[in-house]
Image (cartoon, rainbow, N blue to C red):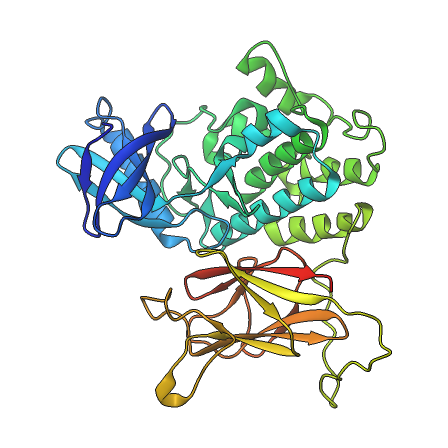
Length: 413
């Protein structure tokens, strides 16, 4: 397939390299000959394209991807077929799989493991909102960009909860090292709690450098997930707080009813663990501190130095430093004399960003984001903001204005 050009409805994608390969499909690095942009193209293997179940599953993956919009899920561009070649075009992610990083660097520092798990859970939360179950959460299906943004990929086993599964009974779906007990018994039993169990297994591996259960073969590993006690991560890593064992005991409970029931619960519990790592922070679910009626005060000469906010426009790498008390994110309109500090006009070809989309505020060294009643709501780490709702920003948070992602960082003066 290398060197071949796939003709899509939105571009012509020349396959220039192999990014990865699985039992069902191969992912290629491609260049769109019309825009000169790089994309990832997933191509169904020709030898199984004629088999109805595989083709159905491939089409379902494409349809599920097109229904999901979140910074922590790889964005699809289009899908279809060019003759006998069935394909899905996605944004190209410049980075590596989490599995590659674990093999090279684990055990991870606590703050890094929590950050990856949180971003992955945000992606699962977006999928859960659309009643989508991934069913194959593993480090190989978690991509980490060069800017440390985490993105879920490979929804080949995913299904909407209300859809009919293509898998017969008594067949588990997933990967043995990360499969939930109920999923091992029957793939149709999987729900969002199964995905969260698998993510907890990934967190265990990031913290310790080892999978929770190992064995000589897949059956042995699956049986341990079903029967063996949940291992202690703190026993394997010197200095790891036992609070992580408490978290994992709940997240990896054998019975789904005893686990975290939603990604939101999982995220809240993870946020509470942040304080146990250097640079930890309070749970994000705490109400933000709002400015008083007098507005934002100007620092006096004798006041201690305050940090600056910094927004990085991820598609371009452009950095905007927030020097004043606020910065508007939006799209310029000279006719209406609108010139936002963070101008996304050149990137917003589909006009999905409002002229005044959102604003970042500063008060006493703390930063907040407020949605300004934008047509396409502003998202913070994948969660939609209510109109005029202020939410506190933390270092590394991801904002999404329309279809454009921005990363917030704190920059010390």
